[in-house]
Length: 202
Image 1: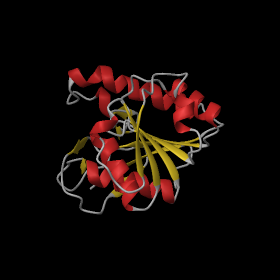
Image 2 (image 1 turned 90 degrees about the horizontal axis):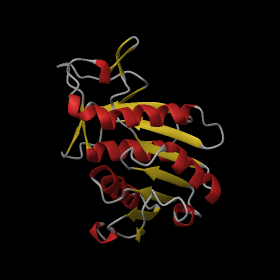
Image 3 (image 1 turned 90 degrees about the vertical axis):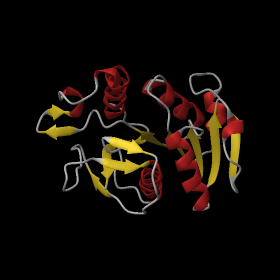
């Protein structure tokens, strides 16, 4: 496939770009500092700012799908508008874990353990997901990671869930950026969560 990755130089974006390239996809890796994107076969690094509404459609035109690994400072409405203008039918979003349920009707962001300093960014993720759930033209997927996504080895396995936080036998919820990228590209290649949110953890 031809895939445009927004935020391709970040921790999630760089791993997703690497995974896409390893599987033979043609990648347009878009970042404000494209020189930081490692060279790889099939990867074209492009300078771009996703907040530039006039320029973004031209950067993603011709792609079969866009994967956004951006922070939530660029609203969903702007990204969706760019896809529609460019004629790209599919959007996969690196989401946040804050909107996952830890009990019926109780979100992770509303628990006492959720760090207060993370809340301003996390609220952006909740708003983003709410906007996507009202979208009917673009085929979107919002992929929430585990509560803790971190640098770590590529183990090559993960479990998936829906709107509930996944934890292991010790009560931990974690995944590496490398394995998160595997799950993202698996979803790209074999869609199971069309216009839906899912999560993954060990």
